[in-house]
Length: 132
Image (cartoon, rainbow, N blue to C red; front, side, top):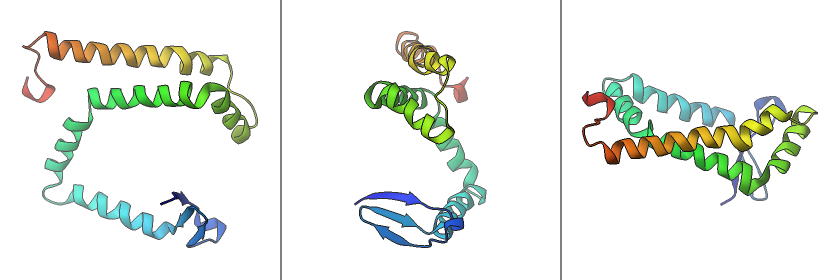
């Protein structure tokens, strides 16, 4: 299977195959979003919302954020990422963004991950937010 590309209606393309890239018709994506949103507004929606809220927040979210930072900054590379931004905006990001993406953000998220895991494993009296 190829990548799924989303092309806006303004281009006048509804559904088309471009080699390994399949263009999704926008009304199909709107239908999927509407069905997903409808699940949350029905009677059992608050239970599903709480399930998603408690299972996705906290450590899993911080861990995914750390993986994204590592993937973008060190696997894909800051230079290529900055070249992509230059292509889209017309100028490269300034030194502030370089410092944030390469040093500050990974440090803050890494410390958060470390604090969260040590709080849970070392202090057995610490309970999840909903049980306090």
